[in-house]
Length: 195
Image (cartoon, rainbow, N blue to C red; front, side, top):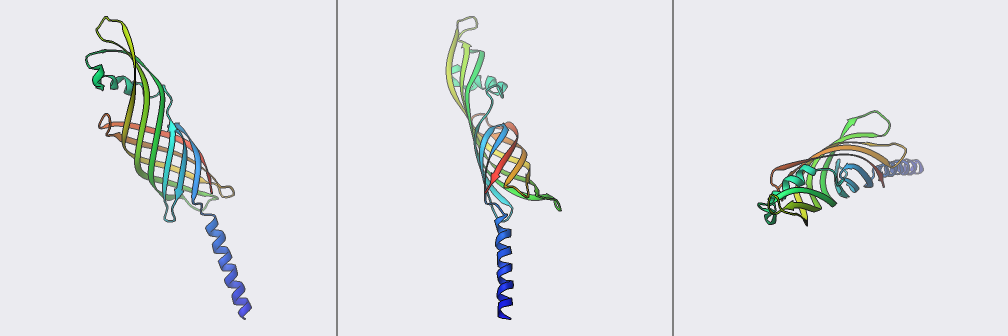
């Protein structure tokens, strides 16, 4: 009798450990879109997750934002904008996410998630301008920084037989530094290896 109890207890313990092993704790992946980035995600037991991303945005995106920012730099006050070139961008994001089941009874796990966080965008820009309306064209370089809170909404599918998930998401950042109350919208798709 004792052997049967020990055997049943051992089997239950083994199954519980095996089931826990399917709950991944970390994921590293690639997000394609705005921004394109490398992501690292830590999953909690209660459907929560923390995600961090480091990436970049295409130099051609957000041209209107940088054009409109020209007049906000004090050193360009009363100058005449001609054009700009974005040399490089860096985007950092930190997020707290809450996952909820979207579809049950299927192979794998299909969730939707929402959350909030913060984003910082750095850009190196060459501006061309005239100091007087008909003066010669002058070129100068500036670094632009934008920081603000971000709200996120997304979908994530975790494959049943592989430690891989795919996701799609959209988010909205409300800039507080350098142009307060300027909204930024982002969207991306991605893939993540979970371990």
